[in-house]
Each structure stands twice: as structure tokens, then as C-alpha cells.
Length: 231
Image 1 (cartoon, rainbow, N blue to C red):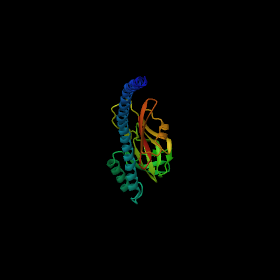
Image 2 (cartoon, one colour; image 1 turned 90 degrees about the vertical axis):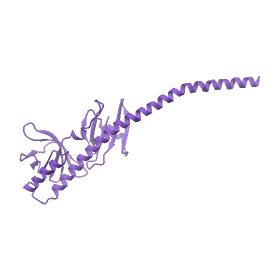
Image 3 (cartoon, rainbow, N blue to C red; image 1 turned 60 degrees about the vertical axis):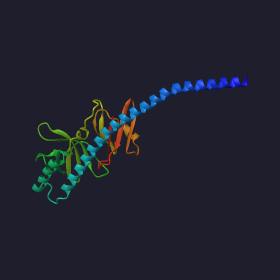
Image 4 (tube, helix red, strand yellow; image 1 turned 180 degrees about the vertical axis):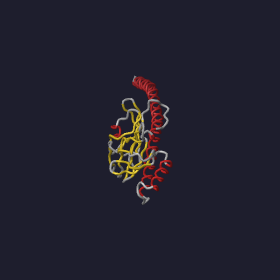
């Protein structure tokens, strides 16, 4: 009787183990498939964020190079030599739309002509000594709104949509560049929540899901200390 009871107990345990395995195997397979799908999709979104980061960094590098060269000429700011250099820089750097000299709150000469440009919009000074003007109107007729990056008495203008001009296979994906020193400053294509930045912490990059959206954030090492996002 004891052996029969032991045999029955073992049989029940074996049946229980078989049922558990039958239930667990599909669940584990689903979890693995879900993990693999997340890894693939997060990799794609992370690539988008890194492309935006590269473009934002290249914009900052080109602007810094142009400002350095103008600041080192030793010539009068609006001299023929400096004006020629402004036009050269305008043509040389792909992310720069115009280069100019600032007197007070006005650009008094630039690579786009003699017309003055008012710097009367919102701006902020970064810890790197660069003043960022969030929206400057340049040109005549129907003036364009551009971003101004100023250091000292010289300024460069860039279109704020250039860092976001990246191809995405998903039409509803959002892209953006946010500044960690002024969360009100942002270049965005689609809805971007500045609160997402808290997820990055001290890490170089992070991906996460929030409200059904897959978000990727990449820390920028550029001179403007920005962070790029995709989601």
C-alpha cells in the first residue's frame, strides 16, 4: 500500500509538472518573442535619435568653427575682408544659413546683405557662453524664421528644422532636440514631452515605453549640450 501511494504521488507530481510545462512553454516563448520585438523596434528608434544627435552636433560644430574664424581675423567687423569671409563661411558650412556681426541688439552686417536684422526675440545664454536666439526673422519680402547662435559680437543663423531632416519609415514618428539648460528651448517635429529627459539620468542613451509609445533619448556631446529624442 505504501509503494502504491508513493507511486500515485509521483504520478500526480509528474502530471502537475507536465501541465506546468505545457502552460509555461508558450508564455516563455511569448515573452522571448516580445523581448526580441522590443529590441528590434527600440534599435530602430534609437538609430533615429542618433541621427538627429549627429545632425545637431554637426550644426553646433560648424557654428563654433565659423564663430572662431571670424573672431580671429583682427579686422574691423564689417570690413570687406570680414564680409568676404562671412560669405565664404556661409557657402562652406552646410548647416549655416547666414553669418553676421552684432552691434547692440542688431545684426549690422552679414553674409546675406546690408539690411539690419533685429535680435528682439526670446534668447538665453548657455554655460558655454553661447547666446541662443530662438526665433530670428531674416531676409526681405517674406522673411524666414531661423535660430541664432551668438558668441561675442558674431552670430550664425541656422534653420531649426535641419537637425530633424532625417528620413523615417514610420510617418507618425516624432523627433526633437531639447536643451538641458533651458527646457523651453526645443526643435521638434511632432509631439515631444520634455519630462522624458528625466529618464535619461547620467546615461548616454535610454529607451522606454510610455503611454504606448516607444521613446529613445540620446545624450549629445556637442558644444550646445543638447539631447536628441525620437519616439
